[in-house]
Amino acid sequence: MATVTMDHLARRNALTTAMLHQLEDILTTVQSDRSIRIVVLTGAGGDFSAGMDIRSLRSARERGVELEHRMTDAEERLAAFPKPTVAAVEGYCVGGGMQLALACDLRLASECARFGVTPAKLGIAYPPRTVARLVRTLGPAAAKRLVFTAELIDADTALRMGLVDEVTPSGGVAARATELAHLVSTRSAISLAAAKEMIDAAGGHDIDQAVTRRWSQEANPDAAEGIDAFLAGRAPRFSGDGPAGTQPAGSALPRLR
Image (tube, helix red, strand yellow):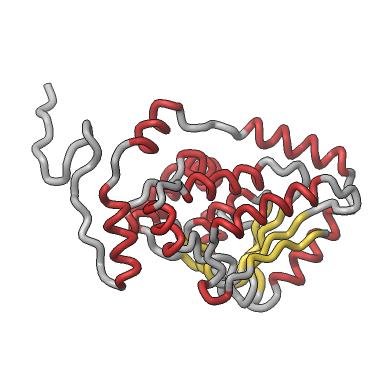
């Protein structure tokens, strides 16, 4: 078993560009190590990850760098990893942290875990591939509830939704992840690799390219406002208008004939 730990204690393990690059490098190393049969992803200091580091996100945007794309690249690298992966979640698992947890094959949660999909608080469109994975995992209704409200849910709610496979008492998730990893590592590596590839292929329904281009390329003034408001500790003042071609809030709807 390889345990990969996100460690950025000052920011509840919020993810930076350097951390995302390091995660991809670790996965490359682990993939070629035949002695490692399974990977457990966890966070240091009682939290999984509070998402992307918003300070890094604003800095990246100012430099014209799309940190969200790098986040999605790391998520996809983890999802495509050929060996079984387990997310051992304690504390906050939010935003980018949720992306990484969703990319794992199995998810275990401490009873103190809190999950959230919070881009609507920042005016950011969640990546299409992440949305597709969220819908495959939870179904459309539960996915909409998480994204629309941006509320945090507790571990029991996550279990009922199917977001996690198991809830452990506080402080016990690491031991349970080790126990589960040991069990899985005794099974046929060939069987597991075949099953993972076939199950992922059977459940794969990605969002079409037209929708992806629309929400990735449209100008989004809400994102700048959301990030600035977060860093200033104030409520955001979003524009209330969608991109060109959508119906602004409060506009008259066309009459049905």
